[in-house]
Image 1 (cartoon, one colour):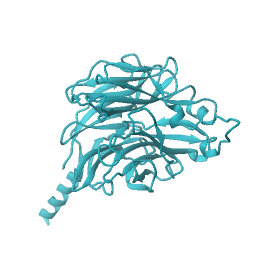
Image 2: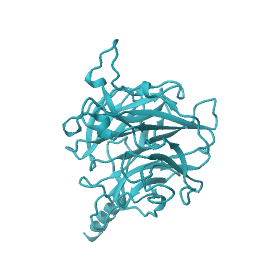
Image 3: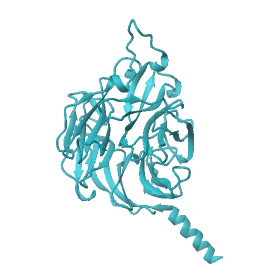
Amino acid sequence: MFRLLLTVSFLFTALFAQAQTTDVPVFVSGQEGHKSYRIPAIIDLPNGDILAFAEGRVHGAADFGDVNIVLKRSSDKGKTWSALQTVVDYDTLQAGNMAPVVDLTDPKYPKGRIFLFYNTGNAHEYEVRSAKGYREVWYITSTDNGHTWSEPVNITTQVHRPNMPSANRAYTFKEDWRSYANTPGHAIQIANGKYKGRIYVAANHSAGAPQHNFEDYAAHGFYTDDHGQTFKLSEVVPETGSNEAMAVELTKDKLMMNIRNQQGDVRARIVSISSDGGATWDTTYFDKQLPDPVNQGSILNLGKKKGKAILAFCNAADPQRRDNLTLRISYDEGKTWPEQHVIAKSPNNERDHAAYSDLVRIGKKDIGVLYEKHGYERIVFTVVKWKK
């Protein structure tokens, strides 16, 4: 019996291990010209560098206002970080919801080209939902690993459906998109199969006037198959209140969208599966294995094992508040999540201890986690070892 108890204890420890982490501050509120930093995103580059992005909020923590997109670079797998670089400054207005991705399949750029998708806005989110402002969608690119960036390209008319009535077209309720936001977190490029090379950005919007319990929100995606020359919209995810989302590649031309439930009636992640590279959705469901307090989550493809995609998922796993940041590993494309690592958990049940996050693979068994900590006081980076 004693040996059995030891075995059970060992298994419990292995499955629900407290990650042995060392947090490295990357963006600290009140430093380097911004009162607050929010909304982390992170990617790795072909040369081995890691780029960490955030919204630099000049005057305070509010979502709307003078908000810049900033980045820092690490050339030693996250041990140290460069000084802050401002990438997008939209004057006194808002630039944010950045979704970076590296295009590795364009023959014009054999060393890779970074795409950074982002949104701009001229009003608070509720005002935009009430048709008293607007959100636009842009991208910039870099061919020198993020040191310099192109002029911005406005793709709003291709990936947004703002209510712009004309004599030739009557807009329906579902076409009256108002609020709009990319993922937040990294975008993806499909690496295998029929849709190899497709750059895919998960996004969300509101449709029509504000409704009770955020029923005007819905998730969708947009994508390019020609390296940013043209873009197409996916179908809308068929779940009312689906909001902030992130996409991940599965096997056999499938794509998964992992989504926040803005309504909060079910405190779990929404999952939608596509069999055509994210253009349409076959099935949508709540994954009760992934509790969520109405918050952002991040997901990453780690490769394959026995013909199935290995996935990493990270979110604040406390259903009541933004705490208990947990990294989970699935070896069967998200059907089960047997491996779990607690990254940050408040010992005193503080509110909003750990919130938004993003993931990057930095080695065969290492995952980098960039996340908001201590009530949004800072965005930190840590490394978690996972099994395979």
